[in-house]
Amino acid sequence: MKIVSAEEMRGIDARAAEFGLATAVLMENAGLAFAEEVRAVMADVVGRRVMVLCGPGNNGGDGLVAARHLDDWGADVSVFLGQERPGTDYNLKLLKQREVPYAAAQGDGWQDFMTVLHAAECVIDALFGTGQERPLAGVYADMLDAVRAEKRARPGLLLMALDLPSGLNADTGAVDPHTAPADVTVTLGLPKYGLFLFPGAEFAGDLMVADIGIPAQLTEHLRTELITPEWVRSVLPLRPRGANKGTFGRTVVVAGSPNYVGAGALACEAAMRVGAGLVTLALPHSLQPILASKLTETVYLPLPEQNGVLSPGGAAVLGEALAGCDVLLIGCGIGQHPLTAAFLDEALIGGRPLPPRVVVDADALNLLSRVDGWWKRLPPGSVLTPHPGEMSRLVGMSIADVQSQRLSLVKAKAQEWGHVVLLKGAYTVVADTDGRVLVSSSATAALATAGTGDVLAGAIAGLLAQGLEPFAAAAAAVYLHAAAGEDMARDLGDAGVLAGDLPPLLPRVIKRLREG
Image 1 (cartoon, rainbow, N blue to C red):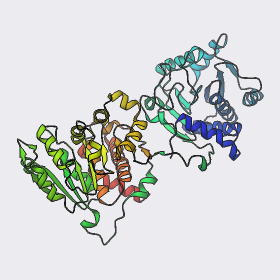
Image 2 (tube, helix red, strand yellow; image 1 turned 45 degrees about the vertical axis):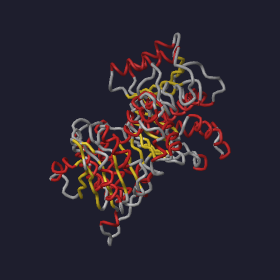
Image 3 (tube, one colour; image 1 turned 180 degrees about the vertical axis):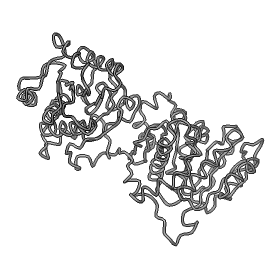
Image 4 (cartoon, rainbow, N blue to C red; image 1 turned 180 degrees about the horizontal axis):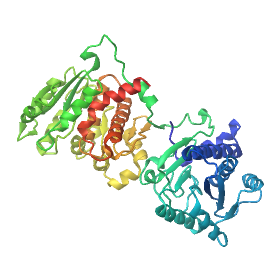
């Protein structure tokens, strides 16, 4: 499913007339589709008290259409306008014909507004959508402030936003101080960037996408999409019955240090659980006995060390093991000791032969951020998997700035660096070197715990080993990882999920996908 900026959505709306979808037709489609979602969420609207807040533009027009259909279906509808709409407004005329009560929510109408609000079961926010450019003020700020206060007093009040919660920036996810957090947002036609960026995502509530009849030809040029189960199913590697372990690739994982002993175990198990044929864990020599009883299926490559940290002498040993290997994953829990930095310089960017596919994670990224032009010294098409803190070091920006422009930043850096870039976090973003971007539709606090990034990196490496291209492997692993986290959250809740809980669930998610 495509994701759009406000400008892209306006362009699509403008071109829709070429396909017989004039503004009035799109408005009718949008209002009806939204009303149907309201009816579905409320289960039954007959006799239910629904309050519709309509703004001055097309978003308000969509709200008028929705109000008309809800009235036709038996809801007790009241409409409040921020300001009077033109007398020629066709949708307002249809409401008048049905004798649906409407009023301006200012002056003498404010008392009626508050009376209806106190009795409402559902409030529909149709004040402003993607076209809003100025801060909320005046009667519109007052209306939303009143709704916010009512929601605090009555948590059971259902608040549904039409396209976007008013005041939520469609591109950045920034929110106005007066924005009312929705329980459900029904976005029209295509989801907008800001619904997957915080704090906007927190204000959107449950997200639904309403089909308003936009022809596929108008969206073919869009390069940003949501990761869907159907897409992941289409790229999952085949598992021929006559296969052997070599069929599914050989992966080497360089991981671990005294402070992060378990990182390699998490990454290796994830690689195996997504189907990698043979996984070798290269680690500081002294850590191997600790992990030997935990990871019984991996091959071990103990590397030279000094006091438990990787040292430059290990690069030659690693280089021999990489011959004939398909994928190298490096960085999980290796630490940032100067000796480890020297090892990384010699092993990864020092010109030694490397496997066709490389995944660079965690501390390897932190160490690379100190090297000028580091991206030029990696094999083309490597997969980089920073979290926001690591990304901030790679690009020299604050974490807040990274988070405020997640989609645009990742897209730009993937093209600049020539590598697939995966920015972790809620609604993880994956960008390819050709401008394509895939966004996870998942945001769960269950994954906000140490070690889950190691699991994700291992899953990427395991899919690469089976022949997936870097962009597909990274995005598919994001989906599998998130789905496993959501499965655990359903069983345990958001708190208490451990990274080690995830790898055993990865095959179940894959099985579920394959079976449709």
